[in-house]
Image 1 (tube, protein in one colour):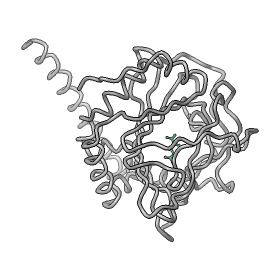
Image 2 (cartoon, rainbow, N blue to C red):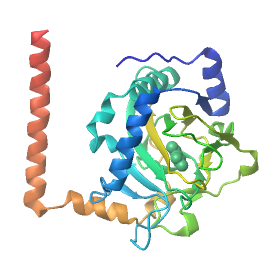
Image 3 (cartoon, helix red, strand yellow):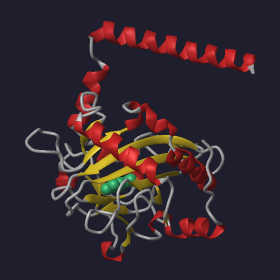
Length: 294
Ligand SMILES: O=C(O)CCC(=O)C(=O)O
């Protein structure tokens, strides 16, 4: 699918000075409707829960009540049709415009803020989640609501220009390391936030250092958002050794990830890595055959 959506020079300049940019449309209405149905299905059936890809971003996953900020990491793994969207094509084109032609998709996530009790997303910088010591890169996220996003249901809010400063201090909300979310406790002024209401299929683009958050969902309907993150070219950064607030984390989702990876013990692990070698070889051979036939 090709993109029909380059940013104008004014939009690019605004992104560079503010660290975020709102777009009225990034995907067609019928696609947004289809995505809504896919998201509802994935969240309803608990896709990815066992392997730690679905979890409560704002809670401890202790099963004592419904998740207040359910999230699925890389939902495309559970719904391959997500690979074929205009949203994905447009978002990649925009990311390459902003971060350069070598920019690649990095990860993606789906968030569903439930009606009435959907929690606020704490103020944070995405870069504070980074856990890959020794490297440096720029990253952007392209956030698309699947229904209208308003101040009532928890639209995104940003601190303009915050991407030009450092990564501020973060901690786990309520200092509870079982919670996946991070909350910025460094100096900033939330009262200077810009709210970003959007129509369904619009987009809010933000830089990995831009301080952002979102309010609770006080409406009668779920607030769903599909977020694609992109990574620009990487360079070595031996000074970056990771952030202390990440090493402290003890989340239930991470425990589920570890047991999923180790399922079946040594035999299970060996069978999976053999399967991976076979799949990689088939992809390589398939690619070569495809090139010969062209
Ligand atoms: O959808 C939300 O409430 C928060 C999303 C977010 O923090 C992000 O995309 O970086």
